[in-house]
Length: 188
Image 1: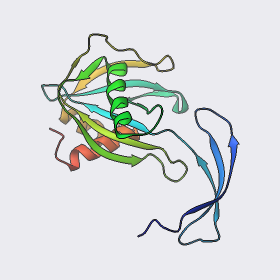
Image 2: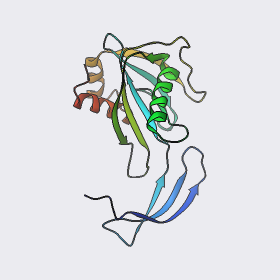
Image 3: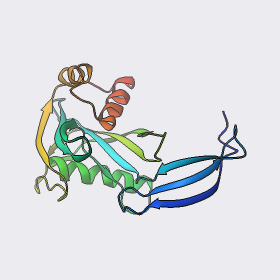
Image 4: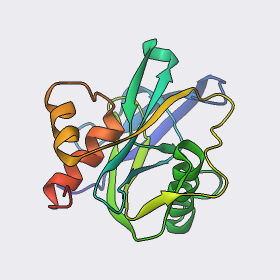
């Protein structure tokens, strides 16, 4: 299916939050050239990184998430600052790995493409990566002041599979990386 025929006819900002600006838009689509009204949350692009240690274990963080009022296991992730380029996305993956886990990548940073987090209401994209040969960084972890990372822990691939199967991992970013790793035969 072609992506031509899309055009924003009208856009009005209805929420001024610096974190989640919300817009009311009228968009012409290939099937609705007259346009349809939609509410859209504009979110920054993110990078999500699955850190793998030299012995093949995967590093997850357990982080408090205010909107759902609970902590959850997830791969490190963060928003890209400034212009969205291939390099700025990679830099974000490296930065978040160090900030959230205190580890850095001494192997490869393997791109796993991107996904839309919830295309029904937001344009947010997450670029997915596998970081190999992660080892402790001299600086250690330095989470953002708004983050509450409760634990950083290594899990085997089998433990990760079990956590996904039982619903212990329920973060969309982490599930997306897990799916890509599995589909590409990279979940060792």
